Length: 123
Image (tube, rainbow, N blue to C red; front, side, top):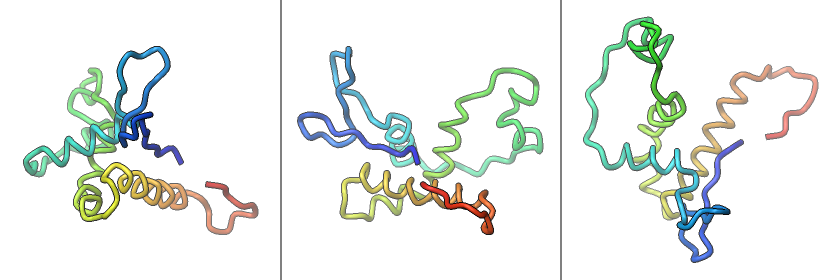
């Protein structure tokens, strides 16, 4: 399903030593970045979006200009509800977040698969 959390050789959760890199780095970087963007930020005020902004992601996209990071926008939107739940878990927040993501992704995938499908789906 795509979720993953790295563990460094020193046992640090959320870090991994990549081949050819001098230092360890975040894994999954997008998830850890999204987690901290929500956790470390003051609550955002609801933003009113036009139909074009909802369809294309931003006012820039509606004007034909480059859009922002869709992956991070989606992660941040999902994590608004996840971070408070994850922070209540006994497990390390990154591990709890990985499990939360697995459940969320499975739910999303099963939501688009026909329930009367004649063959099994492996997730």
